[in-house]
Length: 462
Image 1 (tube, one colour):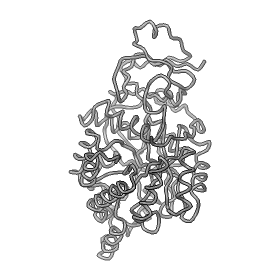
Image 2 (tube, helix red, strand yellow; image 1 turned 90 degrees about the vertical axis):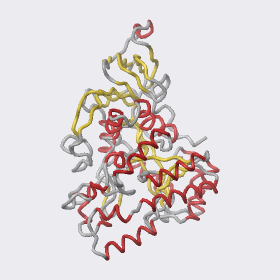
Image 3 (cartoon, rainbow, N blue to C red; image 1 turned 60 degrees about the vertical axis):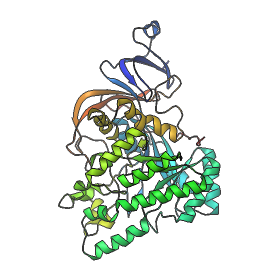
Image 4 (cartoon, rainbow, N blue to C red; image 1 turned 30 degrees about the vertical axis):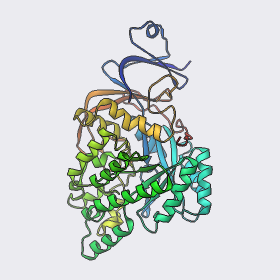
């Protein structure tokens, strides 16, 4: 029968909060009803979960991860097995990772490579975006085929010349194609050509420490690229999603575009909400742990990010989870900050950090669920994800809002030798997690398995 009954919790979705029992069957949400109702009293199930005093929330949707990603002569330290297991521990039940096109090769080859990396390894459901490294007539035609098959979003880079960089003409062509096929262009918005000049000048002046990574990747260069991406999208008549927004000046560009009614969207990440350039400046090369791009900003940028999350000028919080161990990986950049692999771990911490934002008064409970579950599911074409409603996938988290915990590498499940939030005290913790009705975390014990997670084809933007 495979029926599970979750009793006595406060069900929180992006739309409402209600005391309700939740019945799941066959991997789907079958029904919700008030605990004292005749319907709820009549339900029987194979498993009953007591959620008294707890929240019952949708499984998180992390729309920005990089598992098993080659970068800077090494690879991110979480593969699809360890990364999705850590996601489950953190209450995330769907991830959308990035397949990479090798320059000069077909998009299909890149997507097939990443699907092979994930096949049979994932503990939770997964999908893919496609990184366009080489925009040409062949890859533009392939975009149509990928959209039809459920890979409906494409990432372009205004940064990393010689690696992922696309010029304005290539970006415009890709946007025009997306405007016609229903795809969504995701943009890494930093002026990479200007940044490379500043990197060269900093190193020539002997500025090699990790903190200079943040100093050369200027907030104004993020804002300039964001503005340029918006204008190109307007010319193409295409929607635009700007990834990992970190600077208040870039937020202002998005807000202006949205005030004009443009289909422009933005995500930020927990590291920009909770960390800062103070971390990049930690002594003895410890700052290397916090090197990511876009970079951490001075703490005063955080207020603009929180405000934009409340007003809807930023719609999503993803992690950009791309971990590299401090020992042997981040250390590749000793003596040259430009050689530090870019990326932070965080897929396990996102839901807890955002609940702490609720505790701290930055967000409402419903907004927490909107930016972490409902909005990414909706924007990236994941029907059945991000909510608790009859017919939705039974991706459900029983969340204890009262338990206090200390984030630490000693207790996390990500395959990385440090925590970006080491020693941070937060209130709230995932207790039990269902993925399509199967319990994968049972009262803080992992009961899932590699291969349970399914590939999820995504729908195009309507």
